[in-house]
Image (cartoon, rainbow, N blue to C red):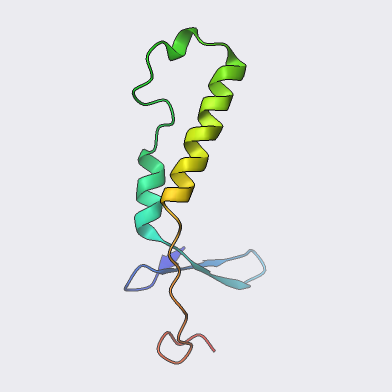
Length: 82
């Protein structure tokens, strides 16, 4: 695994030697890794699992609506992807 100098692309290789280029949004990765759907909710340990799942879904959906990934247009010449 190797990042480019701006850390907006990630290169991985498969066992057969095929290389894959992935475009990433580093800031959203950081935000998502710190996201806790149950933060600030009192009594979460005593709630039924179905209620917890509903809360998790609702909070996660709102998080992803508020933090849409940003993938800038790729300039194949400047980014040497051709």
